[in-house]
Image 1 (cartoon, rainbow, N blue to C red):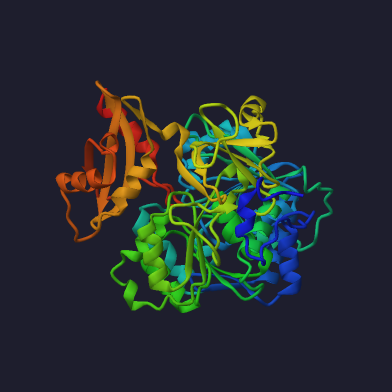
Image 2 (tube, rainbow, N blue to C red):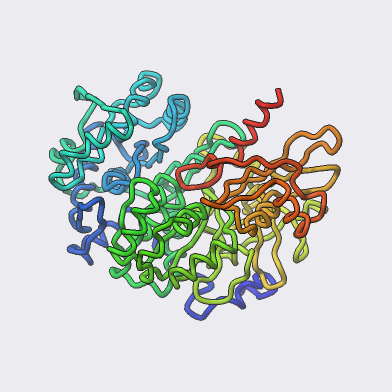
Length: 561
């Protein structure tokens, strides 16, 4: 039996959350079948006026699955899905799984080089993509193993007359009009669904060992690696999420689906959780603060997983006080540090609970989170989820760190990946026995609450001192004029590296370098205070809202050549 000394966080678990869970030994797609059987007439999603029930979604996913088999997909083959948040993204994801395929989620923002790498690395045979991104796919298709491309448009799942009007709006907004000539290998998504048979396919899948997903990492240290996640990895993390949010009721909640489904965070905490528990998703194709405020009020959304920039965007929107957001019960923030001011501001506005969690693509993704209803600590990312063990590897001794000692975070649990696709050496280097080495630096306090200091590779070493960008960013977020900030290390002839802060000010607010410098000097040791400040209108971000620190680092390198 686990002791509190080994897992001190268990003492803080409320009685509703179990220390260990009896996990489903079944495929991920079985959740969609169950939702369709138990809640056939329950709305699965709302999308720009379009509604579909769980039984209808399951039927279309089965039709797609049978057509994929017709086009040559067999169990274990890879199917790439390159879609924004749309009904087609849900249908394609589960349709590929129902065909026995492994899903390869592909970011719609990828350029030709990234598409080519991911398709060749994964060996995907079929891609399902948006018409807007098809021109990029077409340019590299001949260099890949893709045999068929299935194309869809946002208009395909809009009600009349929106479906007729939308192409004109799309062309006006993007400047892109895609004229397609369909063939035996270039197919219309709508026609594929129409032609499919809604019958179940017999599969012989081992949920524990067989892959459901190849999820590619960001490629911050080289070409993106395919993270191998099994059905069991994803089922486990979905069930852990359900247990952590124990006040949510099956078939009754409404989820804001603004996090991209192609990102593992949105995939698990929004799409897979919603399907498992038959929640209704309010699908947003992109982050639109005004649209989200309206949608929360109109649809009485109760759950809103997001990223800090999403909550910041809502809090700073001029119309926020015009909308009733009191339906919100729970929000888990991830993918980037959650400033305390954002947490308290959002909770004061909605009266719901907003807590920070922590995880990685390699952990499906969630490993640690604060309690939504229970003890939490400011600045902490919380405590490990059921059946998850976390410890700190001391940088000094290479052994387990003492409480409050900074080191590398190590994770062990049933949601940890099988390994990196076709990269046994990288897989081996990422593990110490059963423990996954996260590459993140942090510490655990005496009660088992964890704190993220920073990415191991983002640490700034200035004059022999270790400086963690997150600490400096937290201080700058406390300044009343600062909306967003990113801190990096830049070359310094004397100290080796020094600190630079990129700052976005709140609309209508003002602050000078001297004012920010004075603020930092009151809160930080002098060696941590930024030497340089650069004010910007916006910071580069991923579609999930994570600030792209590496882009700023590369820009600085180019400036200094």
